[in-house]
Length: 73
Image 1 (cartoon, helix red, strand yellow):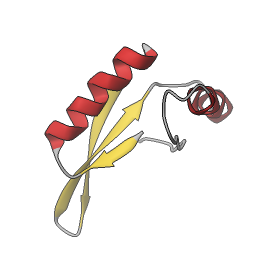
Image 2 (cartoon, one colour):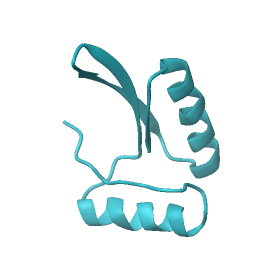
Image 3 (spheres, helix red, strand yellow):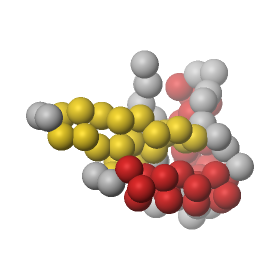
Image 4 (cartoon, helix red, strand yellow):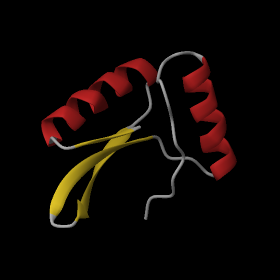
């Protein structure tokens, strides 16, 4: 749902999303060129199609501005 340079900012967004959607979320730390960023990942879905449907629903309802479906390992 978003990538942030500050872990605190990522946690704030994570809390807002949980309240707005009721979905579980997690923060994934990403390392790039020695720099950390924090990605907020919303939900866990059985298939890519299910994730895309939920992303479209959240975007269409205005709950989020933009959603991108990516596999998390």
